[in-house]
Image 1 (cartoon, rainbow, N blue to C red):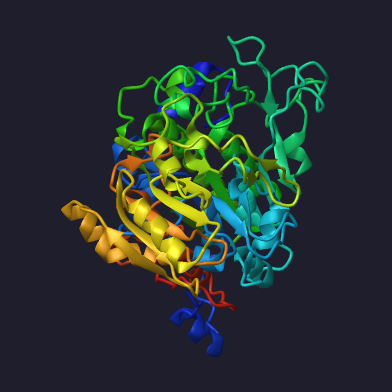
Image 2 (tube, one colour; image 1 turned 90 degrees about the vertical axis):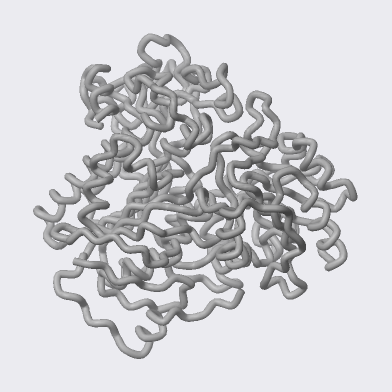
Length: 586
């Protein structure tokens, strides 16, 4: 969406185990890969958070369809790992590793080596970690591994790897230690009386006076031009300062099921202030400015709007007609998807301009960090603001750290689980539990006997189709038992479940895992996290200018993304990866 001067213009835009070398890595170790003729010298990854592949055809997403239909598309791509969540995917994509080899495996992290200094085996919520925290735990059994930024630095010295998005944990897990520029929205600030940049007097929503809490660009090496003041009045905040007041929820706090996880101003939606558009529009505009101004070889643009909308309204079930010109309409899944597509069109145009002006070619990758399911069978609390306490359960006598090295122990926020999850702790052995479209539980007593007892108890919880317990060596999950499944559920489960669950077998990971029926959730009405096909399926498109359209049913897992990018760019891997390279048609 362009930054235009009227609400009508905004509306028009809106509607328009053991780590083994892969064959590729093994071959590359002994035989340097020749640089392909006219290989791309830049890569842009555009991630649509929680985009289900069907949205591209279901909604008005012509830009996505154009790149998909003229690029190489893996139409059977799936994550191939758990947990199927944002905080996992961004590092899987940039490392080529499964979660068990990348340092953390889920929304929760057991600090078995006490790297955060809060005590061995203390539990931390990974979505609250800082950039420094992620850099600290990005290690495979204590050994740091290269990521996309490292490979690009080695091939193109002096160039930058840039990450930009709304969410701190999405941006910072992808950036890690070696990313150069990381831009995300700051924490919420409330000074609406002082001049910029300390205060923002100009960030109330048009038609909604007051309610001026705001966010601005923050992160690592944020370019000064993104924090510049208003060009016509330096006492006012500039373009990348946006309203994020919780009071401006656009009806999501009063409606069900959105009240489980309501909106907050223009953090994930554009809004109706043309000088301060938020959400994915904010992300794309910032990305394009950096494309034009920086010398870069890699950029990761993560668009969070679909995710927020789908969580609130039930993902695939959010089909009622909406007017995307209104603030309330913008909060819905179709409007978010169509706005994300407008941003993709802008990004493609910017990439083509960069290729013309700076030379070379840019490889564009379109994907998602996870799919989604509608929680038709919903097993969490339906109370307002219950999303986080549905997802996370920490017994009050234990608590959970809300961040890594600088966090505080929270013994209240996450101690109000649904009755079913409370029953899981009937023997007092649960240290922490995370539940969404799966249940993952960490135990105090981790003996085989204790894990069997919890896995058996978990098998009796509502919605569970199978439970697994981590073996004594910690490198594999043993199937404890199953319940009745539908034919389609059993087919997917038999083909994929064991390998997906095993990707969580690490010291920091859960001790017991329960998989759920399709269209079943404990968290919110549009959810992810588990092994069901709908939360595992993701779009996977590779495009360069002049590419020939090619769709393939070849098996593709998200850990394959990095080795495939490196192969397309003629870059030889220097470390083992869990993914393998695929050939792209040019």
